[in-house]
Image 1 (cartoon, rainbow, N blue to C red):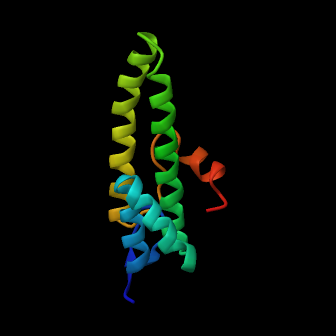
Image 2: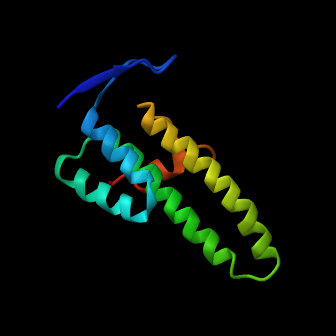
Length: 120
């Protein structure tokens, strides 16, 4: 297993296992990818992968909540449409952070996701 080191700008340099990076990226790709990544990480509990799996699970929960809100006519539809664009932005940022080996929370709710899903 190969380990690479990245410089996170003002943050400290962190060693990231290549397997952890792969698990983190897989976790952002569809709901099935999240389930596969959770199973893969369940055996080893890699900290970098766990961090991004919490972020991805939070994004899925937010998407589910937006879907429920979208059932409400007119106002719910407006909130849903705006929320989907914000969720897409958050998802792209999370995926880019995983690819670039950064433990940076997604915008807006990333810190909450870490607190809500700390058992993962």
